[in-house]
Length: 460
Ligand code: TRP
Image 1 (tube, rainbow, N blue to C red):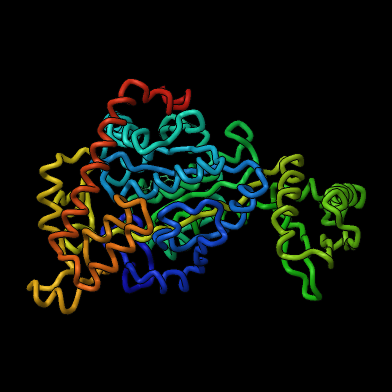
Image 2: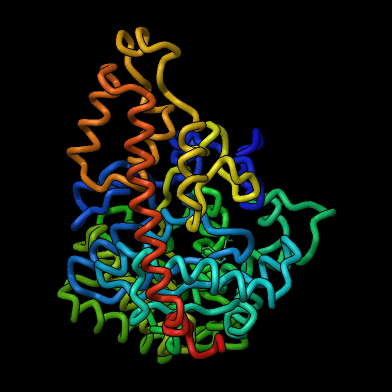
C-alpha cells in the first residue's frame, strides 16, 4: 500500500500494517475458534482477515454446496509464498468445496508480456504440478485458462457496464497513461471470480477466494459489481427486522411491471411479490407486509442471520426471471511471509525465497544466511533470547514446515528464553524444509503424468 492509501496488485511493494488495512477496507478478523477443523494457517493467525467467511462456514456446517476459486499468474517459478494460498484451497476442498483454478494467461500477457503458449507451459509444469504435489484432489478441481474460456471474458465485458473509469482510478490509481490491456485485466478477473456461479459451472452457490491482501482491490471491485447486478436488495429495517427492496434497472424494469408510460402493471408487480412471499413462508416467516407500489417488502421478525438464506431465495427468483443472480464473493486474506533476507519475498530475487524444487544444498545455504532474530553473541543470546517475530527460520517453521503446534510452541519458548541458539533454530528449519521439499519432490514424480486430470475439458 502506498501513501495514497491504495493497494496496488501489480506492485512489488506491499504494506504489512494489517490492522490498518482491516480498518481502512472494512475487512473482518478471522476467529479460528469458530471454524471447523481449523488448519495451521488459521490456528496460527496467518489467515488474518476475511469478507463474508461466515457464509462459507455456514455452508460447511450445514453441508451446503460452496466453491473455492483461486487464480495463478503463470510467470516465474513457484515458491514458498505461493504455497500458502494452495494450503487454504486444499483446506476448503477438504471441507467440501469444489475448486476452480484460473490460469491468468491473459493477465500475464497484458501485464508482463508473457505469450499464451509460454503461460500455458509454466502454468501446467510449474504451478499445477506443484498444486498436485501439495495435495489438491483432481476429482473436484477444475483448472481453466482465461484465454480459452470465452464466457469469462464475456462476463467481464458485460459487467464492465456496472463500473467506470472513476472507480478504476479510485481503486487502482489508473490514469490517462494506463495501458488499456491493464484496464481489461481486472474485468477478466471479475469474470474469473463470478463465473463459477453460472449454471454451467456449478450454479448458484457461495464462492470463496483465498488471496494475499494485494488482491483485495479485485475483490472489492467484484463485490461492488455483483451487488449492483442484484435485482433485490435486503437491508436492515429501521423499526427492526429486514426489508427487501426491488432494484429497478434497465434489464428488469419491464419484468418488474414498469410500463412505457412510467405506470405500474399491478398484476406483474403482484406476481413478483407473490413469489417472494411464498419463498419467505417456506422459510418460516409469517409476518410479512408489502408496499408493492414502492417495491418494498418488510419482514419485522427477520434477523441478520436470516439474511443469507433469504438472499439465496431472492437470487433464485432473480435467475428464474432472467437475471444473473450473483452472490458477492467471499474472501480470506493471509499475511505475507517475510523474505529470507528480511525484506520482501520475490521470485525475481532467488535469495529471498525457497523454490518448490529447490536443491537441498541450496536451501541449506539460504537458511544459514537467512535473517536471524538471534543476538550477536552467544552470551547475549543466552541473556536476552531471540526475537521470533523477526527470525526467518522460526517463521518458516510456523508458516510451512512444522505442523505440530505444541512442538512449535516449545521451539518458540526455548528460542525466546535464549536456550535455543540461532544456529540451532536454523538447523531445525533446515531439517523441516528438507523433509518438506523431499516429500514434494516425491509427490511431483507421482503426479507427473497425471496432470491432465486437473484440467477442465475446455483447456485442451
Ligand atoms: N491477479 C492474480 C495474480 O496476480 C491472478 C488471478 C487471476 C486471480 N484471476 C484470479 C487470483 C482470480 C484470484 C482470483 O496473481
